[in-house]
Amino acid sequence: MSEAAVMLAFAMHLFAQGARKVSIHPDGEHGKRFEIQAWLITHGFSWHEGWGTTSYAGRYLNGDRVLEVHVKPGQGDVVAMIGDRAIIAECKGGIVNTRHAGQVSRLRKGLHEATGQLLARSGQGEVNIAVVPSTATTRDLATRMAPRTNGAGIAIALVSATGSVEYCGSDPFSAILSP
Image (cartoon, rainbow, N blue to C red; front, top):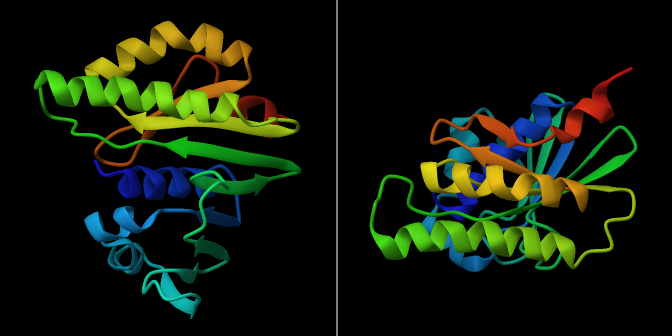
């Protein structure tokens, strides 16, 4: 799963959690490795407004859902508001169907990097989520890391190849969405 595919799957998850507007912030390499605009159009979004020189950057609409693609680093990979809470996710991709030691190590490294990036944020008033592909390796590592990352205010989400999302440790939306 490319990092852009992980970002888009998590953005769709945020819409399911009640977000009306979600922004993703891929870098130029993500756009070269994954057809972001084509994926969005295939999933019911229409291009509404573009900005910058990147062909896929802009605003996409699907009913009352707004997805914005910005090629601006340092914002978080996926950003949304649910209620009065800012959701900031750092995403990493990787090869999900491999036993190659280097690729398995890259999946572990991705989870470490995503949590580290979130630890460097102030986190005040934010819901911080590290998002990585769901594999046996990432599931095992996330299960071991979750008590400590949850204690630091960081949730870990695993995204399957079909786009479903599950959390290791606490679900950050249970507190936000409960009455």
